[in-house]
Picture 1 (spheres, rainbow, N blue to C red):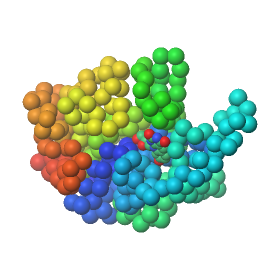
Picture 2 (picture 1 turned 90 degrees about the vertical axis):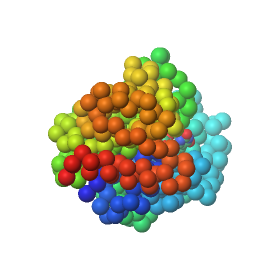
Picture 3 (picture 1 turned 120 degrees about the vertical axis):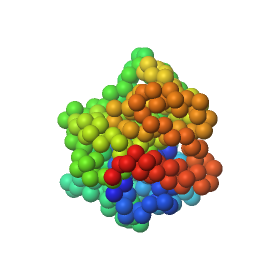
Picture 4 (picture 1 turned 180 degrees about the horizontal axis):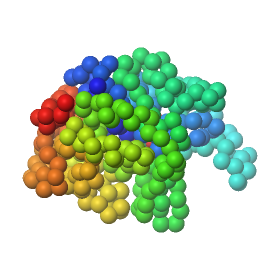
Length: 319
Ligand code: FO1
């Protein structure tokens, strides 16, 4: 079994490539839930939905989140209440865009969670409804929420990422609930033939998982079969704020900075050709370094990148 630790858009694109070079039934992906949020009384799991929709070929290709051919009638209808809404009320927020078809997913997840279903059960029902073969699991059935500390306030991840368009300096992040939450299934780490850390934000997509008890220890025991793909290319993140966050939180916004974050839990880092000159510096951190094309916007790259990640573990002599 191939275990993929995934965040949102970059991980979803990578998984699209992986299913072309490995049997989908052989792939289990554990997805970050630190981005999850409650709005309109609905339980929303953006990274899980991005992975599910992408693997179902239902994702909106331009946005990278939400469903294709989407309409926004419900969101537009909420505008009517803005003038009458009392100052203190949080009802009818319109900064987080929920498409009309996307709402169906949140209606279903919210109702099933209220009936006592676990997030893993609901996630599995939704991926089966979208006819996805890859097994999709939340990192935990317990609530974990990423909070982003700014100069003057602390906000939820979605307030940082969407409402503030991540256009604001971060002074810290923490993962509320992580100290008591349980990772979905530690045996996945022991039993996986290969573990791939997808090209996701090391701080707020992979970080929440690593904050769960036992994860870093379990991964470090099997680090030779763990391979990560750097989400940073030539000092920048291909999508999202990972590069700025790394700097703001005191890390180097380069593949060497990523290697320093991952070296305890991961034996190999896959970096882009543009960073080939840094391969020896990556290896000085104690990780093996593989150089290839990691820019998945070009067709066929995600497939070749997935094959490269699989081969990297074989060379390691991982099982
Ligand atoms: N991202 C945005 O930039 N703007 C949005 O309005 C927005 C809405 C949204 C709704 C559902 C969903 O599953 C994802 C959504 N995203 C939106 C993306 C989301 O904020 C990010 O994909 C992740 O949280 C970060 O990986």
